[in-house]
Structures are given as structure tokens and as C-alpha cells.
Image 1: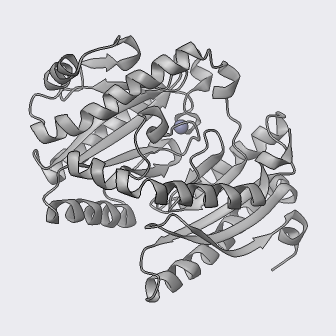
Image 2: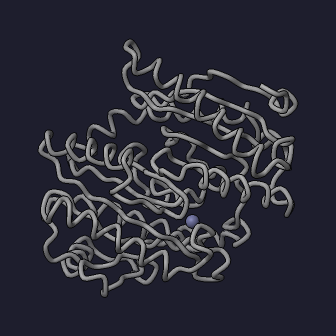
Length: 357
Ligand SMILES: [Zn+2]
């Protein structure tokens, strides 16, 4: 496996290319927002295969991702509820609706390509998504904020839409070249109380997914590609730029049991090395903190946070998965959410990382 697609230098180059593409797409994003103003969030597993902009053929920066082990979240988590409520208030103040994809994932061909975070128990993952969706409904009511349960089937990258009553389920891999009108009718039947505005803004994602599924089918994508090949452990926020499929396990800072999520991701990464799926010389612990304001304390606070989170993750790996340590390169920085540029604060190669700090 060539190192040119692994390691710290590859990641820095990937970010530079992504930041340029993000800049190039700024006008398209504004146009798209004008046409489809609904703010869209996706709560999902840290599994590297679940890349919604690719799966739905949507311009980068439209879908706001929140990732954690197994896609497990709870609106009782202190930091998570602050971030979600800020996102909701931002949308409401601009007169926009909110659509929240509460996701779980599995693979139709083999249950062991499903979610490790749920021990491959798709029923449990789906039930947890339903509980989380109901938390949103009980807190934000019905109207401006609409949560929907959505499965992501990774063999074909198909979205599985669950209707409002949790019983009606539509697998988009089974929908053939439908017209705009047919898709609209499908969504109205699944979500009878969903505001029209959200239906219209959800349609491009549904149509994009149907197109994407057709492309996956016609390319005969090998199933091996859908198996775990992650070589990055990403800790923190602002990882939209890390959009390469099958690259990173991403652990958000939302989970009060953050140390457990980091330990699990580190074990999965070690498993990828042990089973020969990844180059053991290109493994990276990548930590990022997100900010918008370049000039004020927000930027400096983000730098402090990134250094803290990186040290925190290294301490957990030392204690729980020490065999991973000799393989680990360290890259720590902050990501500007407006430009997606990643600013390097610290980089260490595997031998430097081993030295006691
Ligand atoms: Zn998962």
C-alpha cells in the first residue's frame, strides 16, 4: 500500500485541496441555499463509510454532520445539547426550518459489515435512533424542527427512510428512476405533517441518493472497498474536509463518555493494522478544534482545546491500547469553519510521539 495516500503529509494536502474546493463552491452554496434554505444536520456513526454529501450528491457544506461512536447521542448530554440548540436557534433566527437525519447503519450483504458500535445489532441501532428522534420531538415539538430516522445501507450507499410513525420504511435502492412528482408523493406519504418547505429541500438529497445508488451499481464497486480501512483517528470537530471514504474514525467531543469512544476507535484502528487492511506506517491521531472568528479569543481557545484533546487521546491510548502507540503519528490543529482550512499546531512522527511528555 503506497504511503502517498496515508500519513500526515497526505492529510495536510487533502485539507488544502478541500479548502480550495470549498472556496470554489461558495457561489454554488449560496445559490443552493437560496433555493433550499432548510438547515440540515446528520447525526451519525463515526464509521468512515458514511459520507452523506457523497451518498446524496450534495454540495459540500450543506449537511452539518455530528459524529459519534455508533451514532449514539442523547439530548441530555451537556455539551451536545448546547451545540444542537445553538444550531437550531441560528436557523430559527434566519427564518429557516431544521431537518435532522437521525441515522443508523448496516450492510445488506453481511451483518458483520454493519455497525461495530452496536455489535452489528441493526435492530438495536435502529431502536436507539427512534429514541433519539423522539427526544427531538418532545423538546422541539412539531413544525420548525423535524427529525427523521434514516438508515444508511453501506453496500449500495442507500438511504432507508423511516416514516413519521416509525413503521413505514422505504429503501431508496428499490426506487427506480422516479419523477420529481413521484418522489414528492413518496415523501408526503412518509411524512404527512412535515412542512412543505422541508419536503422540497429534502427532495434533492433523495434524488441525489437514487442517482448515486445507480452509479454504485453500474461501477460494480467491490465489497472489499466497503470494509473497514480507516487509518486515522480523528478527535474533535471541523472534520468536514476529511471527506475521503474509509479514511477516519471520527470521535466528536459531545459524548460525556469521550474516553470510551476514543478507546473503541483506537481498538478498531489497531484491528485494521492487525488484519493487514492498512499500512502500519501511516497511522495518524488527528485532533481538530473548530472556530470561526480569526481575530478574537475563539481562535486561541480552539488551539488550546486541540492540544488538550490530543494529549487526552494519547493518554487513553497509552493506558488502553498501548500497542497502537508505536504506529501513531500525531497531527494537531484548528479548523476554520468558514474556510475549512486546517492550521497545524503540532505534528510529531511515531518515534517523537513515544517520548514521555
Ligand atoms: Zn457504526
